[in-house]
Length: 130
Image (cartoon, rainbow, N blue to C red):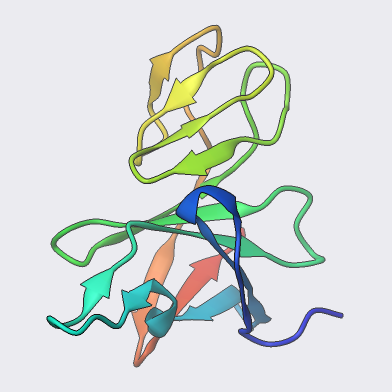
């Protein structure tokens, strides 16, 4: 079983975090987006959530106004796991790209990504998996 909320480093600056199970689905701490800096706090634009309950990871994007959006990282073209970048998700198989809202930017995918409701609870984000 995956540990609570330990951060794991990843390639290309994307942070992967092992999620904690909750009644609604999965939770991650808001601190997963924080990057302490000598000139003040900075924030990651995306964190990739993993858990043994998930067939594919979930990308959680943070917008500049501190809103959050969770997207399933499964390409709608042929089901390949997507790669996360700061402002998009990209399919390594055929090049489909999706924006931070799950909308198709480039095909061959035609359908947008599945999104999950995100709720702020104290200092944690709750991702509802239904």
